[in-house]
Image 1 (tube, rainbow, N blue to C red):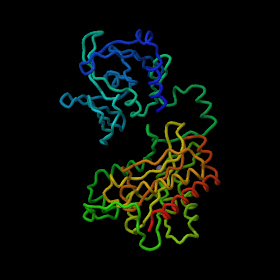
Image 2: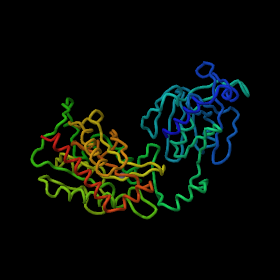
Image 3: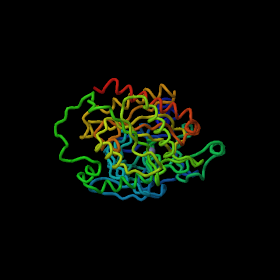
Image 4: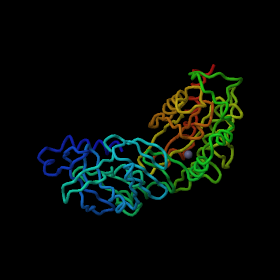
Length: 424
Ligand SMILES: [Zn+2]
């Protein structure tokens, strides 16, 4: 993703003026005459021909919104009063608004970069007309298509057909390794399983009070005024709840070999629990067999049994096979009203230790206040994504006992370091 944006920047920095001049045209954007760059759009191997030409400006390619409907298989509706377009494709619902960097994906607010903001453009060719212009890369990726950019020919390549247009080199790679069988990775390389999606849909229909109750929390107990602390006080032995992601009917991510995320998370969680054997701590797991535990029940156990530390274990997956590395997620106390301690501190300690132990690539710590196991647990919580099943190299590592052990050691050291520094 970043690489592609850099490519765009390159095009702008390096293309000599004379060449650029021959491939630019003018449109009025927000009533300002703007020189834009010619760009080709290639969808599934065919160059897209449009009445009103797509263009590239500030490194982003825009097309008239009607082209999205006709060529990407999505349906689009336009609200003239709100100046907003709704794009529907499969289970995806995307709302964009003219001159606004706020978009809604399935009702969730997101921000797009300012160069991708949808605009009206007035064309003078082939006839005078005002068009609603939308950023094709953002929309295509949101719909789950592969998007690529070729600098030499100024072409955006979009693949809407999965597996059909794979070139020989890619085919070789797939044969050699173990591609993901089922993945719901999105452009941020986050994985959410079908079952979790289902549960989230159910949760979204519940009232706050019901959700809190299901997570063992009382909505009336939530303090209006909190004092956020760096340190936490243990009520006795420090207690840690280890949460192996997925289980039972929910396999999580899967590889073509049949290896499933739920198996790795359980094995790794057991290894982690065993590391604590000689410490004077209280350790439990949300599951110790192959069973499905609801997200709210996982949080509920943490809350009802008053655990001090909650660590969820997951394996990542993405449609992008290059995506790799370890990341640790937390839900910031700034976004989650039930938290009373700084959440990022635990995530950082775990990430630092696990990277040191495994030498894996760090994807950093990330604030994810939308995740139930993080936002409905009162205590300090972190979710470790230990690597990508969809990445051939990481897949191989994740099948090695020794590597799993080093992951467990890393998480163990991170939690211990957190306790040393922040538990009174
Ligand atoms: Zn997972």
